[in-house]
Picture (cartoon, rainbow, N blue to C red):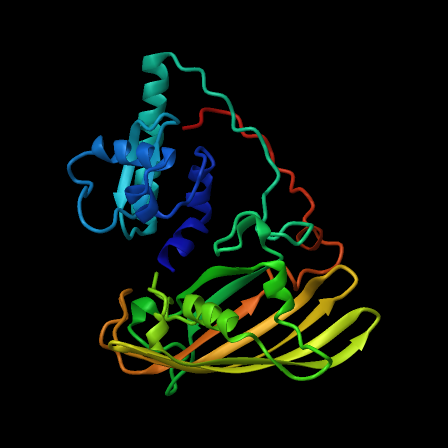
Length: 327
């Protein structure tokens, strides 16, 4: 989306190196009683009047000192020029604060990147209910699909947008994704319904409420063995989903494959695709647009990395130590 294109820009990245950049869910920060939430809400109180304080969301870019003192802010959507201006102003204000208070900033110490999917295959950071008990974490990517001659239908400002989320599985849930007795098996209905309600959503343009229990008209996923050799079991998935709730609906079919390594009790490859037609207004800028095709892909992060690469082995990534002041 827009933010991704802005932050990938070289000029923006050059300025961003002066800051410790973090991302968080602003609704949680604004509503949940936690140390991070208290810091954020206190910060918002001290922002200039032009920064919105009310409403249902305070999403945006915020620059602050380590103790939460205001350096800069921009509410909601932002382009490159606005982002550059914010970072420059925030850095200028920080440097003035350093001189005024005789601060002695230190460079941010280099750290290895912490990846969602660790070397042991166990997630520690991603969303979902399993948390540290997760034995399988799937990255869920969504986008609009080509329709009626258009590569990506809809208003020009939303074309080519993609989004992602995560879903995780405990050890028992992960094993339930495998066939039983060497035959075609239906994945437990409760497990697939939970997966479908949480992820088979039109969230291309932003967050979307999960499907309620009553909205699920159909949810079935089967798995069957394809081959088995040297401890590697290949399986095939097929399924259907249909959800209808209020004005919105999504009906799709699912196809996929996976390779499970019985020697380490872990999926080595997982590919599941859901594609079908969505319709109706959503909470995230979809509006009253006509029905159009939607696609989702479920994969393991870095599963396509070449053997021996940093991504494949989760090896620490060396970073250069930056000198200078750091907000």
